[in-house]
Length: 352
Ligand code: NAI
Ligand code: MG
Image (tube, rainbow, N blue to C red):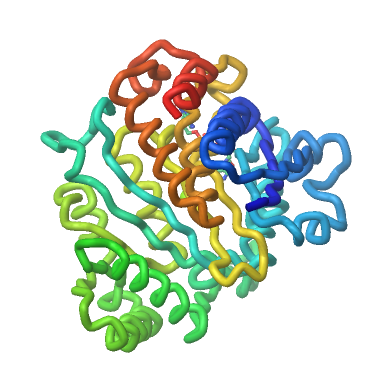
């Protein structure tokens, strides 16, 4: 089993946590006998933009097309490069042009990690957020009219397609069917957004007919955010449109301690294009350069990559190693410890 991986550390702490993911991958490789063909890539970074005036070379798609997966750190440093340039010039291009229509974010409370929600213990919080990643509220259809006058108006359209909604709902039902609880929660707002959201609910109902064994519950997004905080134990798989999923997939990890733990996958499940695996966090300019960033989000993202590539045993072993180190230490400062990024990464690789 040979897997071709593009390795893009990007900017800021992306460069500090990526080596720890590679260390874990190397240990997993030695233990489970698959092979990784790693291609390090320096572009898709603000560093590259500062040198060349562009985030990526013109032939970026051709260079990445043949890869099985992309392992990505973070973009966004130095701050002289505006965020819309760094994100739209790299990650958002990958998502759209490689049709990575699923954004998958596991949310889990680990032993040894202080939970910001009172009274929660490991086991109470363990669910998946499935976010639609290519359409919905995030379009550039619209514009400003009568700009600068008192009559100024702005319009931005939401676009949902039957094709796009059905494929993300199907993916979410499949995830729910593969887990023991057989439960799917659907984010909506059909009381306020009175055209697209009742339609979205209808697509969920239509897909539910193919999965009668799954219990479905719909929640308006406002109460759903409250329930994430107040009753996180009721969730198993949560599916949402692009905007709602974006909000939920930051709120979820926030309920489990530190953003330094949260991984994500941007999937093209049909494998027509490479999928991308990255931590939820960004370049963290406030701690960059000190070697104190938590490497777990990056390492867990690498584990999700292995799972997607069919290396389930290696994924499970990395998760076990993460669990062990979170419970026993060493821990980085965001977890209340004093360890460096390197020390925590080494401990995880050693546990593996
Ligand atoms: P951020 O995630 O970089 O940082 C938010 C806070 O969390 C900071 O206080 C940071 O120190 C802390 N933090 C983040 N990751 C951590 C880790 N692994 N260990 C310990 N603490 C950690 O988000 P922020 O500050 O909003 O954005 C900074 C830059 O990153 C911006 O340029 C933004 O556009 C970019 N960004 C890039 C993303 C990506 O590449 N996917 C995602 C989010 C932001
Ligand atoms: Mg977000």
